[in-house]
Length: 385
Image 1 (spheres, rainbow, N blue to C red):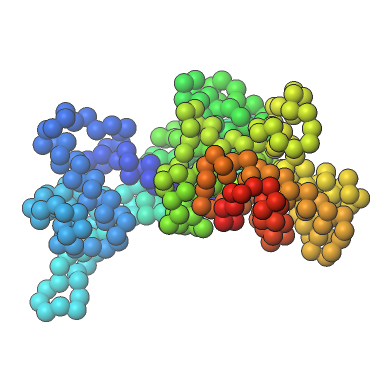
Image 2: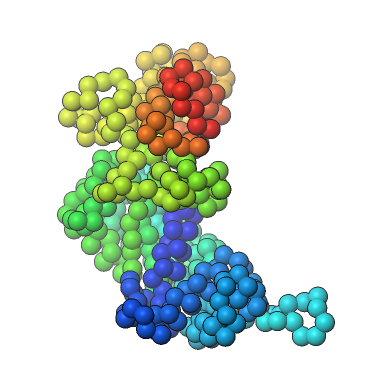
């Protein structure tokens, strides 16, 4: 997950990095001015170099459709800002080869922080996405204050480990199980993290990190990671179904992440599906589907079937040994996962559903077959799993 967050940070950095290396959310250019056009061209050339690797001036012009003089001007600006660098010359042709350019890895540093109920994982990467330092710690989630302090400390420690001062970090992204309400500047819908929705928490984390900091839902980040590096590559419409401590859905439509009007698209843990009373306040706080399909639910199902197990991992291990109670718990979990997919498939019509999270990671080989069979019984919509 933390690698997915780093990738998100990288994109965020390249979006806000302005001419001359200054950081700002929007460039201060008047519409239609030469400076605006120059900035647009520089951004286009920078993005081409970022995605294309080492390229020559002529290759940039060919791929971008810009004139060679325009490309030369854009490259001069990017070189001056130290966003790109020369890396040698083309070989294999008669005469001196053309100069090659690539994204300068040290033009910016990004930090990704994955904050969960059990772990805080942090990675620092250069602007190409190469991770240069990483640390995982057990989360101190007894209170929001201790967790905020831990986030700040581990972030600074990872930068120091890489030989950087924190002032060199350009952007940080906090991946978390909540949703950022932009209208209030407040995190919500994270019942597994004590105090995570309290007023002032976002400001407290930003004060600890002391750099440009963004917040994103962890399941959304996982979906972006699958789109860039995983099973979602080349798939225009897919969902990432996260099953672990909680249950959530990352939605990619037309190749883009879908967040919804308030950022809560995919919070399917709150669907009133599964055994139990959806009107019960305790159930409603976490969501009925989350209560019935999360990791804790797997353990409960195993115990109800007669197997004493403390973790989903133990349940899946017993199922692989052929334990009847564990196999029954796997079937119960598969039925609930299939029900969740059957509920969202007619709405989103995804080509692919990717199962992820701790449950899928520990028992995906046991779940895929039963989920597919149950889905076939439940729904005419059968996305690839």
